[in-house]
Amino acid sequence: VRFDLLQSDFDLMMASLKAAIEHDRFAAGLWRNPMPSQVLVLPLVWDDLWEPYRRYMVDHQKQMALALGRWRRQARHALSRSGGALDALARLDAVYDLAFAPKETRLLSTLPIRMGQLLLRQVREHIPDFETTSETGSHASVTSPAWLAQFEMQLRLSLLAELELRSQPLLGLIEAMKPRTHEKN
Image (cartoon, rainbow, N blue to C red; front, side, top):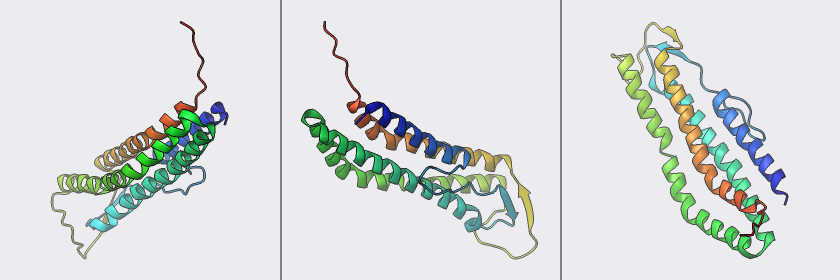
């Protein structure tokens, strides 16, 4: 396996995942899930506001898990073909993945819940008479309130931090494949 090609392909995949989060672009080999529109319909119905953001976040988490998981398995396979210490590293990574993946998944699955709690606090702060139940009556629209744009930025930053966290084991495997130059002391 040529390290330079592997590193280049990995960089492209990471750039694609980042662009999907930052700019709502298509991620290569994945689906597009744009950020919901910043239009609030008042009176506000919680599920109408939160559900698109929850789906946005969960879909991006699934994309990360699928793309990075596939790459991690490929990296382990390449390492195992190299034999010796690299084969041992591939096996060790597989064991760690089996041991820690369920807990990581469980912990990361709480992020949408926490972001929902953050949004609810912001809604209650900026719309003081908000209740989580829907009301019938006249509707008004508010486009792009600053606090909602701020929430969206926080949601994107949370996803980017998760991408960074999820990519760390794979970066370690790729680094292990890097050709070493032996220096004489």
